[in-house]
Amino acid sequence: MTLDIVTLFDYLGTFAFAISGVRLAAAKKFDIFGAYVVGFVTAVGGGTIRDLCLGITPFWMIQSSYVIITAIALLFTIAFKKWVVPLNATFFFFDAIGLGLFTVVGLEKSLAAGFPFWVNIIMGCITGAAGGMLRDVLINEVPLIFRKDIYAVACVGGGVIYYVLAKCGCPLIVDQFVTLCSVILIRVLAVYFNVNLPSLRPVEEGKKNNLDI
Amino acid sequence: MTLDIVTLFDYLGTFAFAISGVRLAAAKKFDIFGAYVVGFVTAVGGGTIRDLCLGITPFWMIQSSYVIITAIALLFTIAFKKWVVPLNATFFFFDAIGLGLFTVVGLEKSLAAGFPFWVNIIMGCITGAAGGMLRDVLINEVPLIFRKDIYAVACVGGGVIYYVLAKCGCPLIVDQFVTLCSVILIRVLAVYFNVNLPSLRPVEEGKKNNLDI
Amino acid sequence: MTLDIVTLFDYLGTFAFAISGVRLAAAKKFDIFGAYVVGFVTAVGGGTIRDLCLGITPFWMIQSSYVIITAIALLFTIAFKKWVVPLNATFFFFDAIGLGLFTVVGLEKSLAAGFPFWVNIIMGCITGAAGGMLRDVLINEVPLIFRKDIYAVACVGGGVIYYVLAKCGCPLIVDQFVTLCSVILIRVLAVYFNVNLPSLRPVEEGKKNNLDI
Image 1: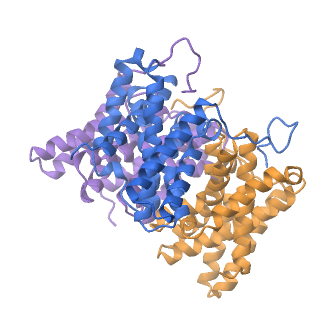
Image 2 (image 1 turned 90 degrees about the vertical axis):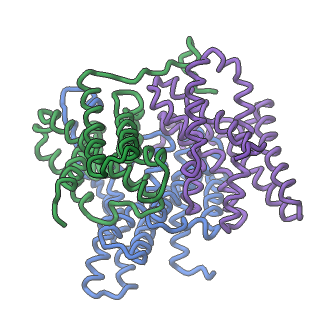
Image 3 (image 1 turned 30 degrees about the horizontal axis):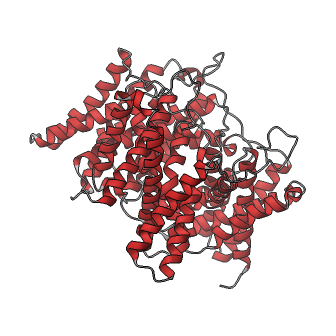
């Protein structure tokens, strides 16, 4: 397999996703195996849910790259701990690239399986964002992507752009590239300008907790 | 597609389930996208687990109604916030109808896939109750359905009635209707008379926590 | 079906896994239905994830034994509560046998589905350890297997031994038996000598929490 540019970005995105899982596991004092599992789930969880919904074999069971990249991410975090924080901006950029690329992969796979555009957009979003959701469930935190930043919404935005360009007769390769860049741009600009979606306020105010519906 | 009575109840149930997800997300100050995801998972999560277990495409990927109804539920909760609490009794009734209908759908789909009666009952129960379980996992709470009220048990009761009537040669349409009404009745009566299942007591008393097995 | 020795161990392992789920649910004051669900998910959750990834029908939908054994485990925990704690060592041993047997079953099923050795090892590990992970997610605790003891790693160790022996031309039945014993031995020795994997330390020291990446 030649390591083309798409594969390279896919691996960098996987690496960045795995690093984020390993770091959060470390913050919870997980052991190294637990950290590996959380890193792996963060990296491949979204694509796994997508593939199960599409009725195909999870992508990471076809080639061993993702298992290996997660191991490298774990070793990297342990060995170069002092580098991880200074490299925050780098990881953030890898993560944004991964988000964009995963979105495009999700869109393509769902399209290839014959689903309509709105399913494709959801699958793009699941591919990009569900890994981080599963990560937060495993470390027993309220999923960050539900409360902070533009993250999954960047995937949805990319999905809409992908669909509109395809409808306009845009060549596939251009469409993919523009979608990828859009997701990255939405994500980067949202963090740069600290844009968040509006939060909902509890329905019953004055009560500390309205969990008992 | 004609909006027949079953479809109408299905949509009302989906709406009530989505509202319950959105409300709990609001109580945790999720952003609007997070609230949408929690509402959607609450509404379609049970049926998705069922369909994956049965080896068929998740039902919400076939038609866009469920994606749209969840969006309406989100907008409704935001726009008519003051109405949500006064309408509690209405939502509770929709929710009970949804529970009953989802149970019947789950029973039917599992039966159509050729599984024995006890699998059908489990699938009916998963269809009705697993969405609420996933919702509580996502908002990082101990699932309510495990601790309070007769909820999943109403689905199991409906499943048993469905099986007994079918064995007795009851016509399908009557069987479905009786099952639907049974689930709703069990649920409504349990809440009205405040009936709960007995709780288990910790195996090791005197210890604050026996999580270290 | 004749109750051969493998089936007997499978059932004892399922029983021990279900007991651990019921006990943890009891510690959280779940009602009896909730305890049943947690026991069931602990017992069959790992195999279910494996079967969904392999694209086959979840094993517990084919025969009713697992549903029944979980019910017996629930009744046992309620009726013989005073016995549960004194029998801790027995349950631990059943659990270790279950872990070993589940690992072998996972390896075999994945191999039969035509996957390469590293997927088989992961499937063995998921079969043995993912049920406990799902259990801890349902009771809203950070998964124990990520923080304590050699557990999932015993499955991985067994998987590697299985592969090496198969490569060396070892007869299947011997290979299975050695793998089973290896997993049990690794698990028992690790607990006996209180061996744990090293924990990761938070990447950002001096901060209480680095969850905001």
